Image (cartoon, rainbow, N blue to C red; front, side):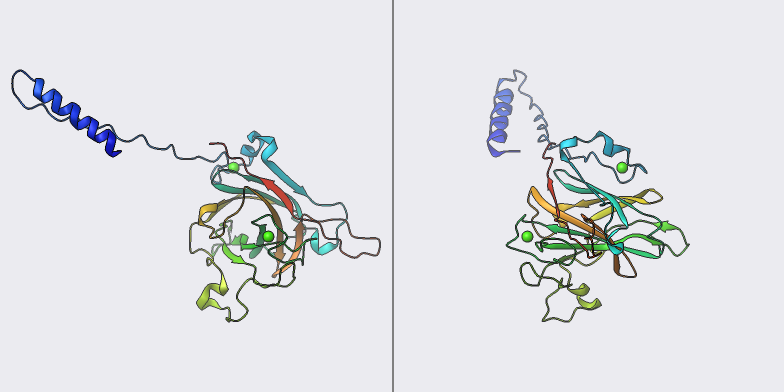
Length: 265
Ligand SMILES: [Ca+2]
Ligand SMILES: [Ca+2]
């Protein structure tokens, strides 16, 4: 309750007491609770066992990257990734080629974000045309539980780029500090340490991921860039966006995909 409102209510209550002819104290009215800001509910649910909610989104805010027809083999295993970024959540729908992702014991999936939408920061030109990635988000998109059942529990580690601007390499921790289990491999947020992500399997080769952006300790602009890879034995087998290989079979890299945010309630 705002102080001014409360003062007004006290004055009104006092006036009422003063006018009560029977001279009995009038119970102080219970103040109305302060109106609560409605809780934001994403249009995407990762507990509905379905990707049908993606068909109902405002189309201008759904950004899709689909595999080129003829990329080099180790960039080909992702078929498509859709992104819908709303007021609170980064939602991602991932579809892969099941013939190319066969070791399901632990399937690493990375989300690379150019958070400030600027080539003047970030790196990781390894898989993309421009090394402007500021954040690497990492965990398994699929894994086999102890009972042998496939599960998806994408609650990732968050890393920032430590290399040179526009540079290459796997430089996601401070090079002057040895990265190991004791420091969560140099992550800004260790895997599973915060409830950042949820996910669910929606088809044999499809997983839906939702990340709570406010728990990612780097601001992501309303317009940003994004890319992805999926791995087997910690080597990439699929990257999006990708591009057709050149006529000599050499990889051609594609730029990251630009995403705009749906700021509607
Ligand atoms: Ca869903
Ligand atoms: Ca950047």
